[in-house]
Image 1 (cartoon, one colour):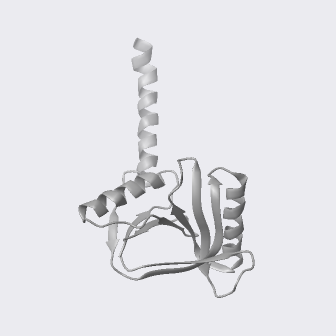
Image 2: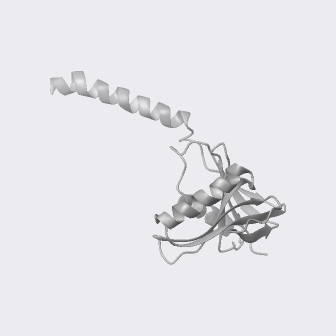
Image 3: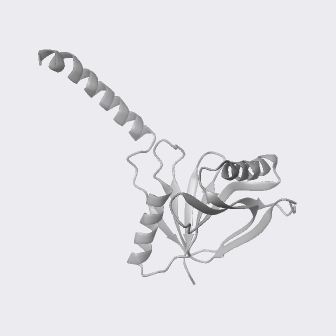
Length: 173
């Protein structure tokens, strides 16, 4: 017992304190704020549609293909992932795209997302402390219920080059 009090407890407290400091530094204790925006949102997107298992190599290939087009300058940042309702938690129904620069890319589909009202959550740059997308969508859903508004059945995740992520969900007209 004396060994635990003299050696293990101080080391455990130091590790715990350092861990909490790192978590705080990366913004882990920052509240996630849901903002309601009343301004025009319009994204002319070019990208790839994917339906299937979320961890599939085909999903990764589609994501990387669009990301490479953004990096090459053929599409503008941010990388936009439009999430549609899926059959279950293991499947995805998404459109992965970038903002169209006006060039028509042969292998890419076109999709335009427009809304005049939407909810938005800005997430920090550290993936170490970002909440999961389902947690963010639940917060947005709760806020829309408070305001008695119905949401569109899809959400947008905007991935910026500095690792900043923005989640948006349009309100039904």
